Structures are given as C-alpha cells and as structure tokens.
Image (cartoon, rainbow, N blue to C red; front, side, top):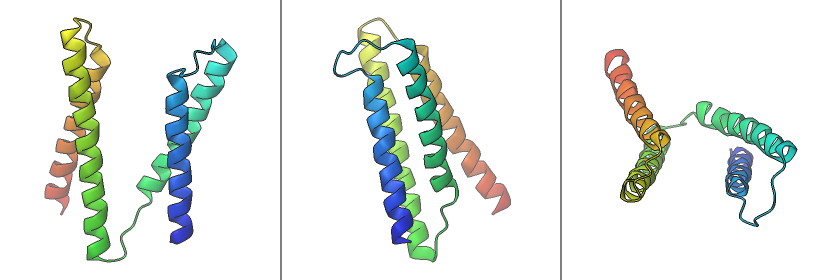
Amino acid sequence: MENNLLQEIFVSVILIILLILFLNPFNLWMPDRIVMMMVLGLIVIFIVFSSFIWKEKAQDERENVHRMFSGRIAFLAGSGILVLGIIIESFKHNLDPWLLLALGGMVLAKIAGLLHSKLNG
C-alpha cells in the first residue's frame, strides 16, 4: 500500500513538471520535436496517473470516505480554477472556449456519476 502511494506521488510530480514545462517557463525555443516528445510524455504519464485513480480500492468505510473527500476537493479545485480562468479571460475579452468546454465536461461527468450511482446503488 505504501509503495503504491509513493508511485502515485512520483507519477503526479512528473505530470505536474510536464505541465509546467508546457508553459515554457525558461523561454526556450520549442522545436516541434521537443513539443511532440513532451506531448507523448504527457499522454503516457496521464495514462499511468489515470490507471492509479481507476484501480483505487478502499479497504474499509473510513478509507472510502477519505477517497471521496479527496475527489471532492480535486473537483472543487479544478472547477474553481476553470471559473477563475473564465472570469479573467472574459475581462480580457478573449475567452477561450476550451475553458467552457472543460468546466461543462466536469459538471456533466459529475451529474452522470451521481445518476449512475443512484440508479445502480
């Protein structure tokens, strides 16, 4: 269990580093090859990260509550950041439709998950 947690934290850190590198923080010129390698790396790391989340299994009710709480915090953080992005971009009169699509997708997925658990639970 502890080893799995360390692996998940390691993969999460790599994912965050890749996301920061996409911002090009060092103002390096990004040739197409480097961008393509970063995109491939992002896809692979995200798939590994998603597999950790998908395989999560709670051992007891307490652990299940902890996992649900962390999922709720993650949803609120993600949707809050998207709402902030929508507000900032709206004031700049340059709203990116991907912000709206991402927030709408999160809300629809949340509703679909709730309906699924109510109908099958």
